[in-house]
Length: 202
Ligand SMILES: C[S@@+](CC[C@H](N)C(=O)[O-])C[C@H]1O[C@@H](n2cnc3c(N)ncnc32)[C@H](O)[C@@H]1O
Image (tube, rainbow, N blue to C red; front, top):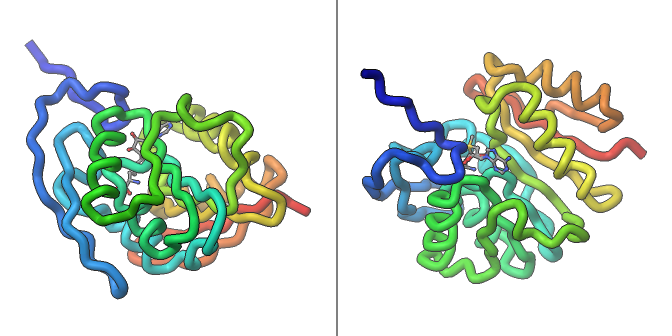
């Protein structure tokens, strides 16, 4: 009998918990984070995530910032530490990920992080910036729906920074976003990943 393979974007991963510590090493931060099976990047911080954290502009100093699809929180915790005057929403459908992001933020003394499932984010909230290593593996249609749910919640003039692997469709995603009326720039290309900057077209 074949055992169904768990996916990191399930609400409650079926795979048993096996916590492990991973290192997030950046020029300005060196943190130990708790990861787990059933959560993206459980064996180490993802290369795309590192590219985003090294190449995207610093977060705004104040206001509401979203880490869309936070996993165990490497992006949210970094944003919060880099912008202590801002408030960072770490949002994920995976409840194990949300718990880890909450614990990792507390351990990193990033009290300006709220870890939440998508339905827990107030509907009227608008963001100064969005950062995401989006869940490309959910498939094109769910990914597009996810982005269309959240990108319109950017404040006027604000930007989203998305990291996507080139061979997982970064260029076609950029083209699709432009077709939806966003202004899209390929900000950086590093190690097989692109960092896209996405803004509402003026
Ligand atoms: C590529 S992983 C990135 C995780 C984390 N930000 C990191 O850099 O390690 C994408 C994340 O998006 C989450 N995700 C999938 N569908 C989602 C949805 N509809 N809403 C919010 N998060 C979602 C997945 O559970 C996963 O944790």
